[in-house]
Amino acid sequence: MLHWLKTPQSPIVAQYIECYWTIEKTAKTNLNDFPKLNPDPATHLVLSPSEQLFLYKVDDTAITGKGSHWLYPHRNTFQLDHSQPFIHLGIKFRTGALYSLMLPDYEHPTLDDVHELKSDIPIQQQDIPNLIEMAKNNVDMCCQNLDELLIPWLTKSKQDRHSELVKKALSLLDSVAINELSEKLFCSQRTLERSFIRVTGLTLKQCQSMNKLEVILEYLYQRDADDIDWAEIAVMFGFSDQPHLIRYLKNQLGLTPKTYEKERGLTIDVYGGIDSF
Image (cartoon, rainbow, N blue to C red; front, side, top):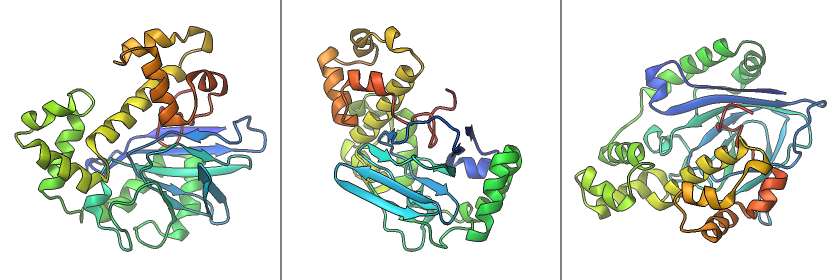
């Protein structure tokens, strides 16, 4: 089992990229074959061997393909197919970053979708095998090479008043009530909401809820089932009561807390999530 997560070293890259990550499953690795990926407001560029298959399933819809691909912000839980050996080298973009990067053939905002990678970024198909090999054997060199490949592209980004406002809002979103954000940012609530949807494709409430879910799942992930007190967790994370928390988790994950407690099937330790087991 190979798994790591690193932040970019270049300040230019770090403006748009939250982290690089890698996960590999070999034939001998004991992992959940069909884990679930929780909702995420960020876009991931997933670099993979050209013939490696992928599958993302939500409800009765399956998105399939092979090789490297874009995983766009998704508001629902995806089920993955990890039944066969695989390796992914991922680039997790900051929420709303693609608004400023102006990719060819990209319609902004794209949500709840996965697209196979075309030649629309500086990382070419011939670069990917070498990057994956470095991800397995020399993590620092891999991250350095990714920085070097991405800098020429990222320096051409275009910031505007919408992206600047949303950047400030995102820095406050997890600590300030939504109805207080506009006052702190010296704009109207309508202006803030419209800019946020324009840049991210999501409402402030949707993004805040996804961020909150990730924090809750990380908290749960780090504890044994016997140590989980759902009533205590409801109070800790600001829910009115335990049934409110249960409804929230079931709506977000399609699972009851008890089912999650047994399965622990969410891959919050990969795809740019927490970096410890």
